[in-house]
Structures are given as C-alpha cells and as structure tokens.
Length: 250
Ligand code: MF3
Ligand code: CO
Image (cartoon, rainbow, N blue to C red; front, side, top):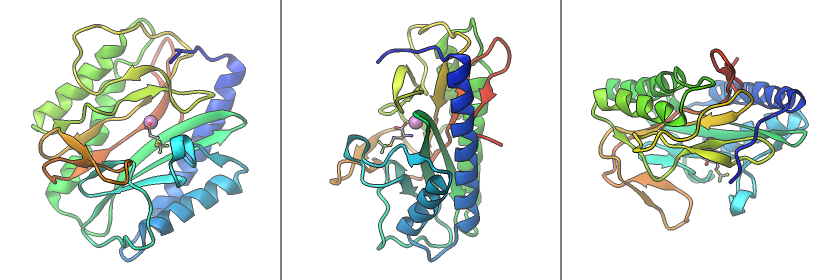
C-alpha cells in the first residue's frame, strides 16, 4: 500500500481524529470494571465515537463485526466483543479503537487492568507501553523506519518477552491501513526514510511467553500459542523534523 505525506489540512483532521480517540479511550477506561461484558465495553466506546459525530473505523472493516477490538489475557488483538464474555477481577484487557473524522482515521490501543492484577501482568503492560516510547525516540524525519522496529524489539528483549511478528504497525490516513508497514522486530533492511507529514500507527504487541501466535476459529481473534498473557499499546503519530507528535494522546 502507498505511503502518503499529509498536507497541513489533512494533519489538522488527523489531529482532531486523534483527540477524539483519546477521549474514547479515557471513557472506556473509566467504565471498565469486573462483571461487565466485552460487549459492554464495545458499547461504551462506540457510543462516545458516535456522540462526536464520528464513525468507528473498524466496524465492517474487512468484515470485522464491532467498533472496538476487545482482547482478554492470552488474546493478542482483534478479540470480538461478546455479551457472554464477562470480565473478571485479575484479567488484563486490550482495547483497540479507531475513529474516522471527516474521512481521516486515528488508531490507538491500550491494555488495562481489570481490578487488581498480578505484578507480572502489571510489568507486561508497563513494558509494552515503554516499547512504544522507546520506538518513537527514533520516529523523526531523516531516520530510517526500521530504527523504530529495532528499538521496540531491543526493549522487549530486556525482559525476555515475545515480540509478535505476524501483525505490524502501519501508515494511516484516509485509510486505516496505509504503507509503510511498521514491524516491532529487528529488520535486515533499514526500511524507508521518514519524512515530515507521514502519519504512522506504532503498535507493539508483546507476549509474556513465546512470540508465536495462532488464530481462533472466528478468523479474527489472535491468541498466544503458549497461552501466556499479551499486551498491546498503540498510538497514531505524526513525523516532524523534531519529536513526533502523538495524535491519539492527551
Ligand atoms: N489496530 C488494528 C490494526 O491496526 C485495527 C484493525 S482491527 C479490524 O490492525 F478489526 F478493524 F481489522
Ligand atoms: Co493499528
């Protein structure tokens, strides 16, 4: 898919899409509690998106049946919300959402604790978030794309966590998925050079155990092959000559 450079007008729209998505995540985090279903969380997120007059980027994307991806514990990404799946104290839940504002998309994910969780789970969540921030230290015009990938990988390695390879970050704009791919693992090539006006979704997916994943029969839900916990942290960022602008964060 094509790599696009956004105009000042497009960047303005993406900033707005990002700001709204930050609110969506805040509201889902506030609503989260043991006993609620993964569908309840989807409803909260979708309602906030619609209250802003926006549309959920993921609903019907390649046939995905919901607004929010809700992935619990050993589920890595693309968990499908269900009324029957109730969250329990001690679970970790990854919420991935996309907002379309006037034709432009934002994409962000957070892994949250349901009530009190184990210290191991807390560390996984924190390290996955830090993988993103380690990666984007290199997200600057003139640098090579795969410097981001290497930095994410190196930080996860320090904890001997598994870095998922089957799914990657991506360019984003008037489509949720544009070029370039943004892998979270070390590459043999340098990749493209970053240019101001590129907008990227950087999204480490990190397993407490081995990196291998499998797909459930629903053809969407990605789970760890060894059953270990997995965390996801994603923001939409804008490449500039200096530090990147994180569009989907307050
Ligand atoms: N953040 C996810 C991704 O980048 C969003 C796509 S989920 C889908 O792959 F359900 F919409 F496909
Ligand atoms: Co994404």
